[in-house]
Image 1 (cartoon, rainbow, N blue to C red):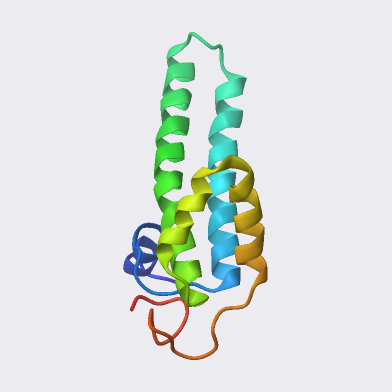
Image 2 (cartoon, rainbow, N blue to C red; image 1 turned 30 degrees about the vertical axis):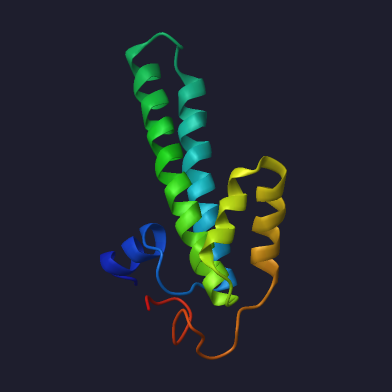
Length: 123
């Protein structure tokens, strides 16, 4: 089981490389958390205290997910031996979906590259 430092690195740091599987699964986890919070929000009356709580929780998760998705994409680009700045394309709506699919499909650079010795670990 991964320790806290590895999870923190995976979701919040920009150094190192990440594999296709880790990128996909981490992105899926972030999406599931957002969908769950949005679902919980829809179950309560809109003007209630509970509704306000779930709305705030959802928007907090969205903000955290934006950072995490960029960090994951930068590390995935590093695995492809590409500069992380290309992750800025994730902020373009249609391009972001295409970029996610492409990053899930293309294999990384075998062996070490300028961004790290191996995948799924910090540089």
